[in-house]
Amino acid sequence: MQSLVFFVVGLSLIGSIASSSSSIQDFVDQLLSNYDNKLDIIEKNPFLVDRIYRYYQQTYPRTEQSRNLDLTILMKRKQIFKENLKMILAHNQNPQSTFKLKLNHMSDWTDEESAAIRAKIPVEPIKTMSRIDTVQQRTLTVPDTYDWRNQTRVPNAVTPIKDQRHCGSCYAFAMVGALEKTYAQIYNTSGPLSPQQLIDCSYESGCEGGSFVGTFRYIKDNGDRLNLEKDYPSTPNGAKQDKCQNSSGQLLNYNQTFALQYRQLPTNNEAYMKQTVYQQGPIYVYYNAGKREGNNTILREASTKFDHYATGVYDVPGCPTHENMNHAMVIIGYGTENGTDYWLVKNSWGAAWGDNGYIKIKRNSNMCGIATWPYYAGLF
Ligand SMILES: *[C@@H]1O[C@H](CO)[C@@H](O)[C@H](O)[C@H]1NC(C)=O
Ligand SMILES: *[C@@H]1O[C@H](CO)[C@@H](O)[C@H](O)[C@H]1NC(C)=O
Ligand SMILES: *[C@@H]1O[C@H](CO)[C@@H](O)[C@H](O)[C@H]1NC(C)=O
Ligand SMILES: *[C@@H]1O[C@H](CO)[C@@H](O)[C@H](O)[C@H]1NC(C)=O
Ligand SMILES: *[C@@H]1O[C@H](CO)[C@@H](O)[C@H](O)[C@H]1NC(C)=O
Ligand SMILES: CC(=O)N[C@H]1CO[C@H](CO)[C@@H](O)[C@@H]1O
Image (spheres, rainbow, N blue to C red):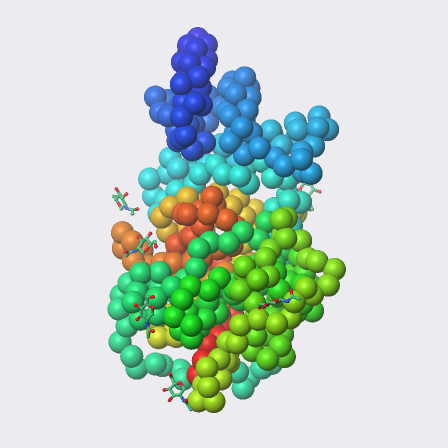
């Protein structure tokens, strides 16, 4: 009987909330706020799932190209959406968790679509020994909390969130994120740099992935030059273009005293990473963003939770630290929230993802390999 009553309540709520601008997660939370057995309600009311999913589709309409009217695909998407909805509701009920999840534009993506924005990162063994940062301990005392978005040492060191779209080009976005502080330092203005130039011109693998070292080498070979994003814009869907459109760009050095260089940080040394983030600027990290194909439970968990992260400190115990490194992001700060140390990380999946495009990832436990292969680049 309860579910029948619920239907009526649910439908009237849909009518009133759908017209406001509340997020899909707020919508669901309000809809289910009076129920303890949220998962049961979802499981027993297919009609309710239909209505929530319809609201979701209105919130995130698909573009013409990706709209697929094939009924089996539509049913499959709805099933994926339902599984994600249940996973999110279950996670958010856990009072022990240090973070919350939310529905977003990725909540009905197939495994293949999720895989497409993950990249193949060529493993870079410690072959470039000369580039390893050998200052094993910086002696500097650094603040306990730091955020490169708010500081005054180098105004505009962090630019607005970008979106790599359906392309495994995180490596290019992370590279520009790591260099934009250097641009701001040289030109004293905000300089969103062009990931598209790196995707098209660097001889890395376009939307199939690439490496820090490969993209850095391209910039050096290009005379320390990289275009601003406005002069070399991204393609509408993030895809690689057939040829390099413009290999000129802004000079990323000042004078003979300092050269544009990079260093790889010693692996799994987060105290040192913290000092480096404060002293040098944002750093580039490889990361295990999970995987849904196959039967690896922990990788699947790391994938679905990462995709739906909302707020708090992300922590998936047991997330592998040396395998499945398939993403690159930029650490732009660090701190402690409710007793849990975190890295403040800039992603390139748009501002609708995560906490306005950012994520706090647990610090001092090499969470998902964040401390396995860190790099920084700049003038020194
Ligand atoms: C940098 O730009 C800011 C604002 O545009 C200006 O106030 C400041 O004087 C500039 N600093 C230098 C060193 O040119
Ligand atoms: C290439 O980009 C530069 C800005 O970096 C611009 O001045 C130039 O006109 C562009 N060239 C072409 C052929 O688009
Ligand atoms: C290069 O720039 C640095 C930082 O602004 C400055 O200290 C140094 O004197 C400059 N060197 C030359 C040769 O201009
Ligand atoms: C995953 O497990 C299911 C059932 O246990 C099995 O049918 C399937 O073949 C497995 N898939 C892979 C990729 O191992
Ligand atoms: C910190 O913990 C308190 C009590 O558990 C909770 O109410 C609060 O939301 C938490 N703060 C953050 C930022 O997660
Ligand atoms: C500590 C602090 O003030 N952090 C702020 C830095 O700036 C971002 C946005 O630019 C805010 O969201 C943070 O709260």
